Amino acid sequence: MEGIPHPIPRTVEEVFNDFRGRRGGLIKALTTDVEKFFQKCDPEKENLCLYGLPNETWEVNLPVEEVPPELPEPALGINFARDGMQEKDWLSLVAVHSDSWLLSVAFYFGARFGFGKSERKRLFQMINDLPTVFEVVTGSVNQAKEDAPNNNSSKSKSNVKMSRQPEPQPRGVKMSPAKEEEVSGGKEEEEEDEQGATLCGACGDNYANDEFWICCDVCERWFHGKCVKITPAKAEHIKQYKCPGCSNKKPRV
Image (cartoon, rainbow, N blue to C red; front, side):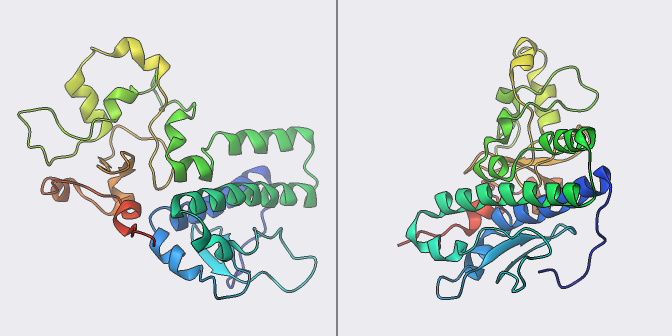
């Protein structure tokens, strides 16, 4: 289905990198590019599939004609259900099928190139360390048990969910989880071990102390500034921030 040929992954690391690239493309389609994805899934067209590509891009296209295909195929006909259910539920359903497809592609490569038991286990462990597409799309990634690097405990959920700086800071200014922790001090250190890690709503990666983050005032998910093209300077002038997914949502009749 891919117009540009990509190298065929043959090792565990190469298969995982292929998986991660395809996953990144699918997440973009279902979060930051959701309106574009919605429009491409025209119910008037034939059976359409959502493909994630190894270079972290995505496409909506017809299934391949040859049988059996070179790779496992995604779920067919996602466009037919688009207008028959709420958009949130439809995106969640596509996300679930996307997760299944990603696993099938990864283990197809594993079977094709003779991965043994230990290699399959290592591949799955690497995949399982990432939140699923469904978890990212539905905002449930904060429940994932992932620890931030070089930190003995997870970031406090109550800290990272603050969308405003405490007074007397301007109310329109967003702050990164790292800065919020500095403001709150050590008051909630005892709760930190019980909280989940904070992950970007766009790419699904962990937050890092040296990165700028911004929180959506609608869905309350955190995003890397670079993922949503917001700089600290721009954030200073934003009174209410809406992420691309929330900004593009339109009432469905």
